[in-house]
Amino acid sequence: MGAFDTGHSLTRHLGIFSRTRPIRIAFILEDDGESQHTLDSVFSYAYSLWGGKRFLIVPAVSGEISEQYWLWLKVYDPDVVYSYCTLPDSVVEKINGEIQPLQLTEHKVHKSHSLLGLRPAISVHGLSSLSVLPAIAAGRLPGEEPATKILGFYDYRAEDRFIGDNFGGDLPLNPITVPALRRLVEPLAIVTSLQVGTGIAADNQIVGVQALLARMCKEQTVTLAQLSGLRIPDAEPDYRRPSSALEVVVGDTFVDRLTFWNIRLSVRVSEDRGLSALRIPAARVQEDDFIDTLCAFLKKMLWQLPGGWSGRPRINVRSHSIPVGELDKLVSCLRAQLLCPVSPPQPISGVETCCPQLDKSSRMRKKGGVSEFLLGAPISGPPGIQISAELLVVRV
Image (cartoon, rainbow, N blue to C red; front, side, top):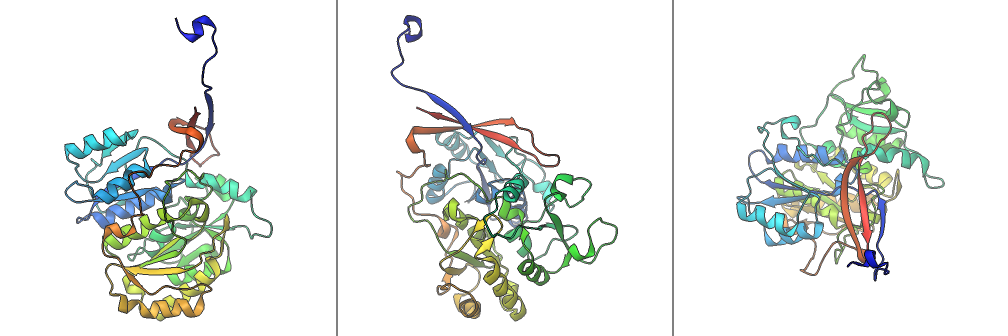
C-alpha cells in the first residue's frame, strides 16, 4: 500500500513552477564546399530566435566530433541537435544516450546556395528575438537613450558578410506584414541602391557598410543579433574561465567564422548585452577609411547599447587565415582611438581554440536541485511576433 493510500505524509516536497528560457540548439557542420553558405543560414536562423546568439556550432570531420567539442556539447546540454553532415551510427547512439535531445535531425533538404535551401528544419520552436523589443521599451535604464531603429536587409546581402555575421539583418521590413514591429521601432534598411515605393523612407535606407556604421554612431539602432542575446536567464554552462574581452576575429575562413561565433559563449550571459565579438573580413583590414569608421563605431557603441551597459575591459584581436604581423596596423588604430587596452594579435590555431576550459565535472548550472524540462507548447504573442516554448522547472 502506498503513502497516498495510508494518508502518510511524503518524505520529500515537490515544487513545480514555470519560467521562460531560450531553446538551446547545437549545429554540427563540416568544413566542406557548402560550409560558408551553411554558416550564413545558421547565423540567420539563430539571430531570428531569442537566445540564438548563444547557439553552439560543433565542427565535425567525417561525422566525428573531437573530444573537446564533445565535452562542450555535453555541458551545453542542447534541446535540439541539428546536423548538416551524416553522422556515424556510433555518434548518433552517443548523442541519444548521453545528451538525449528532444530532436536529433540530419539536414535532408537538397543543398543549395540559398538561405531557404539550407534553413534548418527544426520542429521545436523557440521565442522570436523580436519578442524582446517590448521589454526593452518598457524597461530602459534611467537616462538611457531608447532605440529608434531596427536594422534589416531589404535587397542587400554583402559578399563580405560583415553585416550579416555581426548584426544579422534577415528581418521582414514590410510595414504591412509587421505592424507590431513598426509601433516600437522604425526599420533601417540595408540596400544596394535607394528604393522607391517600398514604404521605407529614403532617410531610412542605407547603402554600404561604412554608411551604416556612421549612422549607428548617430542614432540608437537595435539589431537582431543584439536582441537574440538580451534578457537571457542566468542558466548557462559553468565555464571555469569566462571571457571578459571584446574578441575581434579577422578573416573569412570556416575556422575564422566558427571561432567568432562560438567564442561568445564563453562570455557570461549577464555580461553579453551588446558586442562581445566582432568579425572583420580580410579585405577590410587594410582599408584605412573602414578601420577609422570602425574605431569610431566601437568607441561610441562598445560601452552602451540598447538594453544595458556593455563595457569590455580589453580587446583581443585574432585570426586563423591572416598572419599576425598583418594585424599590427589594426591593433595600433584600436589602441590609439579606444578606451581600453588592446592585446597583441594572436593566431587561431584551429577550431578548438575557442573551446572553454572544461573537465568531466563541468555541468549545466542547476542551483538548488533544479532540473529543467522544455515544453514545446506555443504561447500567444503580439501580431507578427512569434512566441513559443516554455520551461517547466521541477525543484526536488
